[in-house]
Amino acid sequence: MLFLGDSMSMGAFGSTLDSRLRDAGFEVHTYVAGGATPYYWLSQYQVISSDIGFWEKTPKLERRLKKISEIPKVEELLDVCDPDIVVVQTGTNLYSSLRSKRREQSENIQLVSGLCRDMAEAVTKGGRRCYWIAPPESHPERFSFELQEQMSKIMESSTKPFARFFDSRKVTEFIDPYPETDGIHYGATEAKAWAENVAKDFLDYAGVEAVGRRALDPNEPFNNISYKIKKAEPVDPSAIVWNEIDVQVKLKTKTVMPNVKSVTYRSCLVLYEYEVTKVKSGYYPYDTLRIAHFGVYNRKYTSKSRYRVGYEKAWKLMPLSAYPSISRIQMFDDLEADFDKPIYFIKQS
Image 1: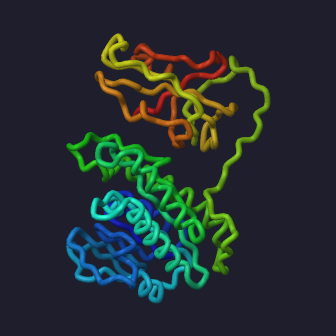
Image 2 (image 1 turned 120 degrees about the vertical axis):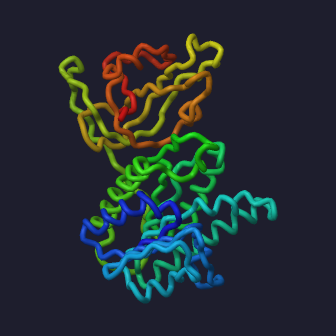
Image 3 (image 1 turned 180 degrees about the vertical axis):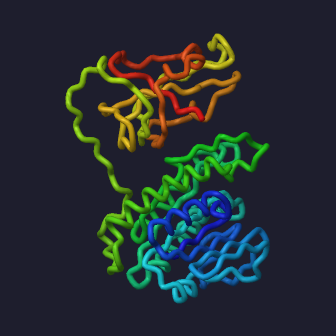
């Protein structure tokens, strides 16, 4: 296996994912270059140096360099490593290209789409498989949510004929302040959690669909595995002891966000209803789930207040009742009454 990444993979995300892949029995050749995009890796473009870090780890050696005069080209690495699967983590460094003022927007889209397509096509030569990791969520003041969504759609559509696409925004949330941080790179705890989600999806894919090489079929679907919830048997809600659950959900409907001035105190909760697409652990027998979020915090709207219907996420949740101090905060709820289901809250560390 060949694992290529940019600065997102230089720290906890890359080291965690690399370890999980090796622990699963893969022979992994990892090459990570700060600032890298497909432009850096593809041999059709000039050789590029990097002075913001380079990490190489193979079964025979490991080295980390502050500078490297020539980032290796992917075609050379394919010849040397001869992998069955190529993991490509990239995208954040392409935001500057996507919003460049030097070209028309249509040209920006064409440039980014072409780079991603060429990269995915190059690594799948010889019947190899490609697993494409798109960027995690960035702070909206660094890159707007609209720009992030646009990048995701461009990358998915351009790599779809060749790669399994993983949209990292669905399992990440940038929680650090901006501009105190760069609004892009995650702390170790959040980066490790992101890597664990990627590793799980990758191992599901590799174990089920990517055993050995085979010629690529352009008509074969490479979308993420669709998890279906089995129809639950009737249950008596009063007999259930609600505990921690780990679920993947999709936003179905949300309470109308209140005006900040109508919030009695400095913060308030709002209730959202989600469709449950997967229960990873714990017991939850229903198709929908309600989560209380901070819609306003310290007189300011939160990032969750901007979630749109259709937004997907994976969370570990606890019943709101497990947090008495949070339960007492004013909550806005204009959803249809449903007293059988508990209200959940994102698990606090």
